[in-house]
Length: 465
Image (cartoon, rainbow, N blue to C red; front, side, top):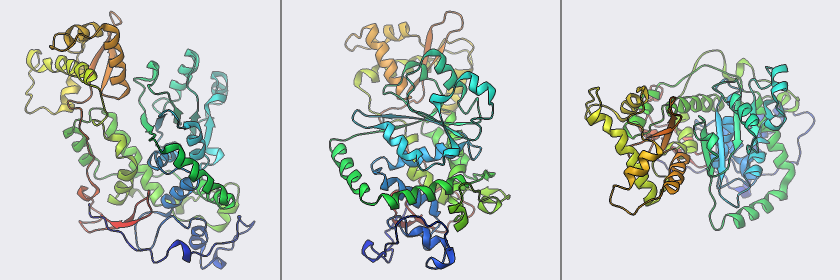
């Protein structure tokens, strides 16, 4: 991708600050020529919008998050916003967020969700079976926020029933690291908040800066939350999704859900990117919708601009393969993989290993009625100690299997007859980074190979793709 800095023609010292606070009534025409200029005064560091295809809502949401002290974890925060509005746009997603020791993940989620209107979110702690039974539409089109899922068995079942595959709601939940066992096979996107040695000191300094202009920050939150609230669902076509799916297959991205999740995210990104400015009255009103003018009835088509935004925000989420694992975990992984691949040499079905994609190979494994090629814990323990390395006891093998499950490198299935868990790998390679296609490689009919000006939603810097 060709990416060049593009001068904004204005630095921070040239920006004239506006009077703090949102007025009771906004006359868009009198605010420096229009509502766009008026709103931009609340976001002096969002980046240039002139002559590029990145929608203003992305840049203003990014600036609002930075104003709340979110810098290092900005990609995760933007992804969280996508999950929070996903059900509102009829593309519900589930997102689990874990964090390193020392990071306040609850504060992170609170700060991000503050940019979403109260009418679009529900706290999981207040949901019971009785309430859900009496109000079946209570969570429809809304995001469920779960700040604590160290739950009883009954509460675990309620949370599972609210997953997008079973309900019309989105779900954003904080989870422990490593995840509890009951979440291992729950289908959801997973984001992690990493810390470094200087993290706490950096964030403390940024929070001090934030406190200097609380009025502007509240103005940003009001504008962005109402803008998101005003989005309406629309049909979106992603013409290059097969290209992405083929790339994931070739690079051993072995969860079949990845392509579906990517397509959902791209649809949401497209709707957000095409959202026009709200009117002055819509900002002031307590409730508003942008209606047909927001996205319109005609089907939208995602372009490489939307893919670029997705790539900047969620690339690392789908980069399985570079998760660090220990040498002992690698031994366990390779033992499971070796057992899985015996289906090629010992299976009764003819499989041409050279002509069969990895994804298809795993589909064949998944369709086996018997779990002959999925080793159990005892079989893994026995086989790993035949590889010539140091002996590993059974409890340690079990812990390493749990670690591999947490990293998404293996999955399990229970034997319906004996009840034992059996395992297969989700990729044939570990220790390298799997990359999504670069935005410059995307086959976009709309651009016809021409370069397009964009703004990075993370930095606000301009460039071309």
